[in-house]
Image (tube, rainbow, N blue to C red; front, side, top):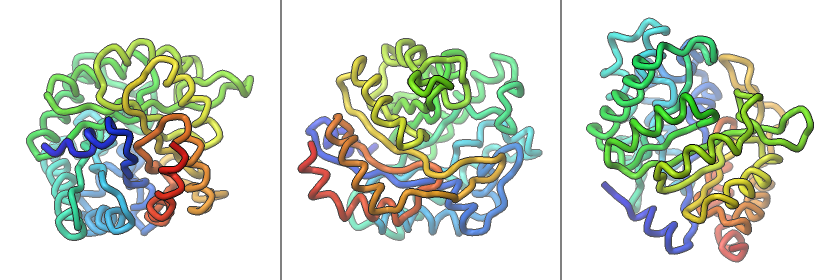
Length: 306
């Protein structure tokens, strides 16, 4: 288990994460699955997935993320691949490891992604609680056994589902990232869960932060909402902080690559997040290797913004 990245964050250094993986698969021609989104891509396009991981490393990423956001058993069952759960996840982990071996010139850590994504991204489609909880624990076990360095909890937006995922991840013994996602409510001021508009961001933060994350990330959040979200996190959390926002918008199951922030503007905007305390920087859906390369090229300026 490589914890170099965590020691660097604690030492106030900046560490670069990769960008969007699922959206990058789509951008390169992979059809998204209506039930599992990009979750089946390792099963159908492992070589391309491996190349995407390698491209992010070549762009400057020091941590890459497994394509396991949508690969819990209950999601894969809805996609007709429940019996292939072990195979799909093994291929996703292999693609990340092989991509690292292809491209890394120095230490690169692998984050094992776990989300609370329901089948079809339909919040009414969650399984009953025991099956859901077991699904998170099973995926965490597979990721740890496969050799990831940490667990990245992504899009934790409400307490009911996120607590189950976080407790399962913490039981594994690896460092755990808590990734929260939000957007502005109709009043254009209140921050709420990205897919849970009736849940203020403060609610999952107040419930999840005491559980023991190693890093807290504001992720899959529009750049305009990142700074106020970071402010809310910082009011409750003094540990390592990260930011990896989304660009564009989503019409299930496809990402819309419209009105994207340029890589140069993305890197320039990141300086504000650094000034607020963010030290882990990357991108989520809609971002590309070019956005990570721009962050890498801007590192001298970003370090000055601390």
